Length: 439
Image 1 (cartoon, one colour):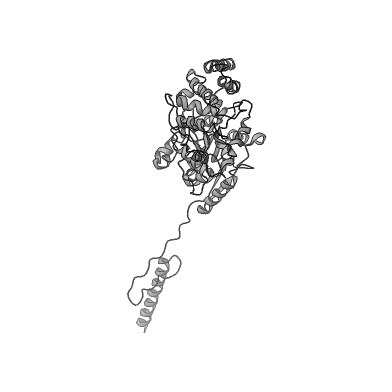
Image 2 (tube, rainbow, N blue to C red):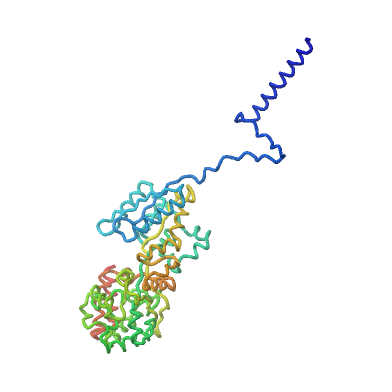
């Protein structure tokens, strides 16, 4: 009897030990599932689901604020980005920058002084870039572009230098301006004229149209800023254009005299303000006009409007496809943001993509990237994009490279060259004297 009791106690002890061991093998206290009766294998327990990308807030400042024309597009694209990337929150710190309401520069300077730069900024370049470069708080873009050749190749040739400061690419140019020759294609068709894409074609159009009630070229000789800038660049090319009031500019001024004598301009061109010359072209009373990107909105509704580069005349030293254009702002990225994660860089690549930039350009301006606009885009905007994308070079306007007084002399006294009261060389010498006295 005692032997039976000992055997029963031993069996009970073994059962308790087995239960304890099974409990230790299951952290949750649950036994593993039993194998199915048909002998199929049991799926392995699944690991916990990945928590996904780390949540992050990007501080971004731009001038897309207030009454700025690009505000609606900006709001749309950042909302879409956050929907596509739910772990990202865009803290939009954009502020106005127009006229006396410019609080953009003060905010940027205050952030730099406090060592609290935004992660990203669409901010001015040129002289405004110098404090950002000197602060040492912002990356330069050369290595990022070199690491992504496909992205680099999407920028328009000649655009990136606009983002340089002291030889370093501190900003990525984005939306810019341009100047060129606008023309009404219907008038050219009606008179069986070739488009004015050469000096010979311009002269032929002037010769034919001067005999009609159509003004060949609507421009102001009271303040012919765009006219002078585009004609000088076409005549001398990008390098000599930087040699302010150089004698090589003289033939460009003399060509205005040729056009004047052919009755190419409005009869009151000498006293006609630039703003008053535009309606003549917009309303279809003139065939051509030297204009800038800021005028295109008034031309969008006319499907016959186009803009092209002013190409070099025969015998000149100009370069085909060279245009007056610039990019006054670009994207900056703080070193703090770059070191924290790749999210700021990803957002810049999103903004600096042809698909997103094209949506801004449909509102206005020129693109620093090679973009494609929708087929239903107004023809004048399509022609502008084609001109900028095909540009062989982009040069700053002349009036931004010389003292205001000197440029005003050049512009206002051009009429005297046209009327033969002074030579182009004499005018250029007077301009140089004013530049010297201002320095």
